Image (cartoon, rainbow, N blue to C red; front, side, top):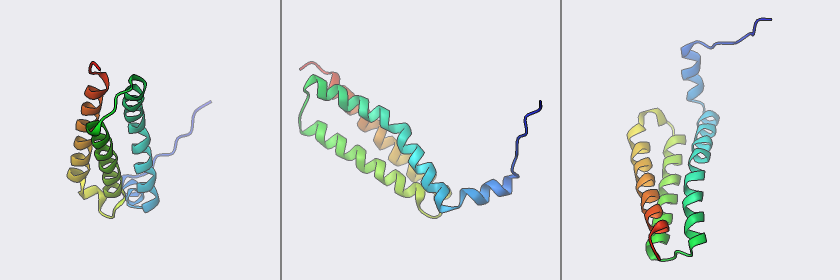
Length: 107
């Protein structure tokens, strides 16, 4: 039995990409993709009993960058703001690497 698939023309996909609900959905999925990385680093730090101002500051900066990336992703004209989203993403990666380094360092 053949499978029926529906393909949409490119113009239809581009028009759909501009809808606010679609951008909200994509921003939500992007947050869910990054959550396991942040949660695992914070879990390791918590289980090892690592504390400190640097750890707290990196976590706050990570969350602010995550919020900033989501806001830019959802804002009108989001397709033109790839560099801004990428900058927020780089900040998140640097924070995650810093958090991981603090979480696994010898206590």
